[in-house]
Image (cartoon, one colour):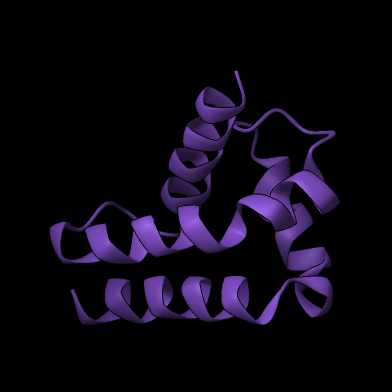
Length: 82
């Protein structure tokens, strides 16, 4: 169940940040690896596929772990390049 939740969260978070881009696949994997704990700690009251997750991450940006912040930043940069 947790794996499915994390997977769904990752898909929704990445879809909400920008349109899918083949060059961003490693960046999505980095977000999944680095942001799962932050989701569970800060935003787990929302369904992983809910739009509120992205809003929760934005609201709690200062509280996100440095690795999660870097992974999100890498994903956003990859989307801008692609």
